[in-house]
Amino acid sequence: MIQFKREFSKKTKAALCLASALLLSLPWEGASCITLFVGLLPLLLVSAQYTPSWRDTVSMLGWATLTFVLWNAGTIWWVWNATPAGPIVATICSTWWSLLAFMAYHIVSKRAPKALAYVTLITGWIAGEYLYTQAPALSFPWLTLGNGFADDPWAVQWFEYTGVFGGSLWVLLVNVLAFEACLTMHKRAWISATLAIIIPLGISIGLFYKYQPDGKLYSSLDKMTVSVTQPNIPCYEKFNNSAEQQQNNLMELLAEAPDSAEFVLMPETALAEMINDYQPEKAQIVNRISDYLRAERPSTMVVSGGETMRLYGNVRGSETARKRGVYYMDIFNSSLGIDTTSKVQLHHKGKLVVGVETIPAWLRKAGDKFAIDLGGTFGQLGIGKTATPFEHNGKKVASAICYEGLYGDHMAEFVRNGAEALFVVSNDGWWGNTPGHKYLFAFCRLRAIELRRDVARSANTGVSGFITMQGEDVQRMEWDNRGVLTSDIRLNDAQTFYARFGDYIGRLSLYIALLCLLYFVAYCVKKRYYLN
Image (cartoon, rainbow, N blue to C red):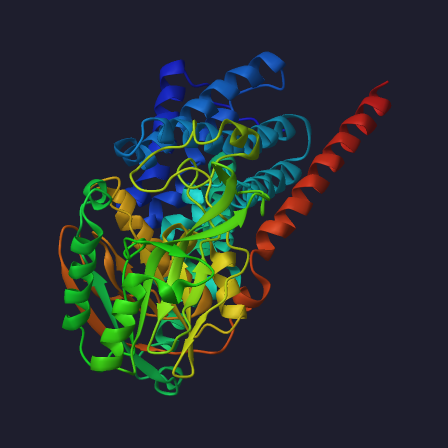
């Protein structure tokens, strides 16, 4: 049983919970990732105050709930700018998974060997993150602990082997070692906690220089020139402006891109026209872009976001189809690859924004009643089933849309299908000039490292720019700017360990956590048997 000898007052316990919430929140507000390594330590000290009684367990549940609610409030408050319901629902869901893992640890720690308790905490927490990532229609893995390194890519270059769940494992392991050092006050325990930080950092720094310009790997890769556009149309005005006005803006930006650009990126939903999903080449704006490319730059492909509609007639063609009159249809948030040929390449967004683009199946019977309207099309959209790259001039590129950049294994599917670089088109200005749009860009740094692909990102109102495969920003255009950025990016056809095996740490953690709980039950039964 884990017990701390010193007794804390209620005020001290409250202060420790506030400290945990603050330490966990800081990396999502632009501070150093270092606070994550002790973020759970104050809460673990509170847990160590209690006995195995159920009364004390309920008390600990209250302190843990307070901590995780404050952590959520301190990191996703900006969602309120788009919808007051958003941060409330996200906080409830995220707090649930954190509480489930921590309280499982707390209960085990009072009745079983501490080794079992520590493994339960680490694997249970990661399993919760993994299940939350996979949850249909309720997934919002913003606070996955590994995401806290988005502003410190130099520290996690080994994500190419582990993905962000490797970062979560690192954070949890160091917290446990630091907690054990506080309990025992042994010099060896403090050395172990310190080495658990220093060794992965050293490995990361070594990997970082492997991908520098003077390294062999860098010089052996082909390059291509890419331009990203930022139209800077305020999100809440975007769908009220005329389609012609928005399209003229795009054509002006396209003309500003250099002739050498093989790809020009335009943001999510930029095309401002509902496009026939079966025949996208017949859309007016698609023809306008194609005609311009034929006349001015025949070697360029435009990759742009747009809305496409698939009509099914009077037969429901999919689970997500909506009924309008007597007909069923799916509306997709799509990216389109437009060049001088008559074929338009399509990708349908596969990871949808909760509450805006997707709602739980049990709420769909109410139609769009519970959907959040941010302007334009809202409610249940069609869900893309594949992550197929676009191909142009013999080069294959991912064509991800906004929220998809938050999911490492989903982006890895593009790479497994042959993508040599990552493109992301986005329209993430709904929350104003807050950490929301900044971190959607920052999370792309982690995707670059996991998959060792250069990233080009085009956003409607910022941040747009380029990220190298070691997670460094090359160029970026900030909030409330309009223009075009151009850069050479590398092409890589090699698959990282993570690209091949995806979120294997999350899957393994789920199995191990279940085994830990089964072992705990068996341990308690055996202990009771011997006592009797």
